[in-house]
Each structure stands twice: as structure tokens, then as C-alpha cells.
Image 1 (tube, rainbow, N blue to C red):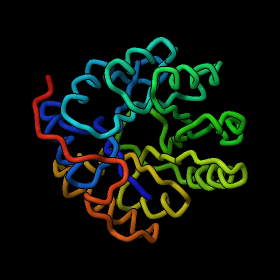
Image 2 (image 1 turned 90 degrees about the vertical axis):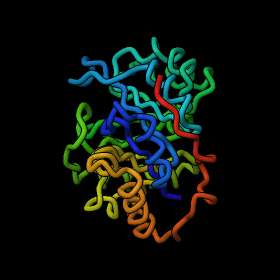
Image 3 (image 1 turned 30 degrees about the vertical axis):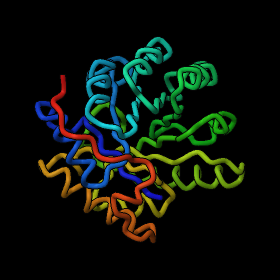
Image 4 (image 1 turned 90 degrees about the horizontal axis):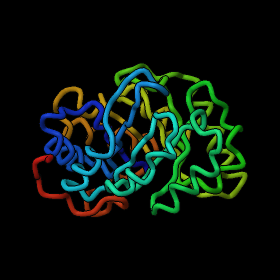
Length: 243
């Protein structure tokens, strides 16, 4: 099933609890948290304290995408903050197997991220350990970028590898996912759609999240699903202020 993972990088941080609640009402079943350190990528965003605050206001899985150097040093902190999924970049992990084991030992679901210029086949051996593989369809560091078209070939290749190897990891895509690209993305094989600007950019995350998800599921040939049938989420959390 295609699922929507609203990225809070594009949300209004002064109203973050309300923004997350609205995105959930719009069909979001995962909350995507972009963590940047200003070294691995040219931007600085947020860290475990914000994840800890988010944990108080939503029961949805928190999908923490670590765009940082030395991610092993922070795995424990994200686990303690309440992260459910943690994904790390192939390019930032010289000992990727060890890093995924560390994520697993802390009770979280491990993901592997590939930058646009990184070939899918480079992670074939590690795929059995992955809960999800995230294809970056823009160069990481900033929201609102345009989708890189050759990412579709990478999604198709990843889907083919999953079938060849008989694995069950999920395929996630992050970058430029919007109404004009989402059909191609899901038809190529993506199931987890990270969307920031397309959900939060106009200040209507409930409306825009819903229409994006409906377009994605229609392109995938899926029937519209109501809140009761969403497989990842639980009952929406009551709105509370971020502390």
C-alpha cells in the first residue's frame, strides 16, 4: 500500500503540533524527520529534542532520516527520544552493516539511504537487513527542490532487486514528490512517499496531504482508504503543544 510520510522540514515550526495533527488527518501515516548537521549536507535542522517533543503529540511512527556524519554516535539518543525508524546514508557509513545492527539493537527499524549519484547495486548485500530503502530524488540538504528524473530508474532497479532476492523491504522516495511527479514515482515502485512542500507549503496540510495521497493511490491502482483502514497509523493523537 502506498503511504504518505509528511516531512516536517517544510512545516510551520511555531505550530508544529497542529501541523502534524493536520497532516495525519490528511492521510499521513508516518512522520518524516530530516536531521541535518551542516557537514554531511549544507544545512542544519533539528535533533533528538524535537523528536522527543514530537513523540508527545503523535502516535504515528517517527521516521528519522539522518543526513549526518558519524551517525553511530547519535543512534542511542534518537532511540531514547522515541524514534521508530532510523535511516542512514550509505555515503556516510564506512561500516554500514555495523550501523544497521546498532539501530536494530536499539529497537528501531533500520533504513538505508542512497544519494542521487549512488548506484542501487552497491547495497545489494545489505538489503536483507533493511526495513526500508530511501531513494533520494534530489540532492539532500534543502526542501523544495525539483525531482531528478533518473531517480525513476533507480526505483525500478530497487524494486527488481527486491523481487529477485525475495525480500520485503519497503521503497521510500524523498525529494520533489508532488502532484506532477507522484504518479511516475508510485508506478516505478515506490510505496513510502516523503513530501514536505507539497503537504505543508500552502499552509493546508490536511487538504494537500489528502489530495496528494489520493493521486498516488489512484496511480498505483489502489482503492481509496479511509482512516480506519490505514495500516501504519493508530488513532489520531489529541492536539498538544510542543514543549
